[in-house]
Image (tube, rainbow, N blue to C red; front, side, top):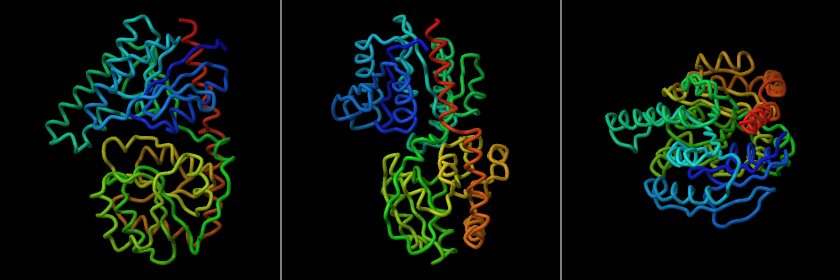
Length: 369
């Protein structure tokens, strides 16, 4: 492999982001590359061999998108890297300027942005969101022209972009990291259902809590992640089923895996909004790597990917979700079978250890340009 100086950039993601830091940057450093990560942080430092260049934390989105992007671009130009690899759509203008300066540029696309924008109510009414979605589509068109490689985090993103420059590197489970996660001592008086991720309305959190009301004292729901906002959190806390919920807050990656290993059942019951129907989240793979039986939304796309390795429920129906949870609670053998099948699926097809080889192939191709 040709070793290079690589500069990864994000104005949106936190320092300990699973894909950016724990998977891509750490993997590239272990392979011998010189890696700098420009990201929001409180100081410059070196972590696990990665040179961290700290961006200021901005007060609001507009400040981050304008001033944060300019700051990131200035730092990036100082690096004089062989490859610039950025992760956020708001950095597309910076990426274009880097390309015009003669640099090799990679855009890592985590979401189907033009579709995702349609669900962002903070942008305003549907007309405003459609206009923003059209603008995102225009930016994607420029990306196809200017950038050397576009990495898609999911197959549906690659299909949406429909470009010869696109390469798919999914957010598969990092088996080495998961297997090294330590055991934890925590009180567990009853069976545990776990959900780890964003605690938002469109991810079906309300329906999941309502399902726990039906389950009653048979199980407790552990929620790990950040709440969408205080209003939604308060709304959920008022639900009768919340007395069967333990909200554990946001955790770093390794810590989350320790709690997964302590659980009995995992859920990914996203609501059927456009950006979810063909998404491929990393959480099911992480649950499976922890040998957990998983209940997922009954999306046709997910059924094709996961087949008989998981159980399915209508994510809008708390009754169906509760029925599948009870099915697993009442059948220890089924829990074990699904847990073993899921682990095997990850080992054979959806591990980061396998996906990282695709990342190396991308960088080898860039070295030859």
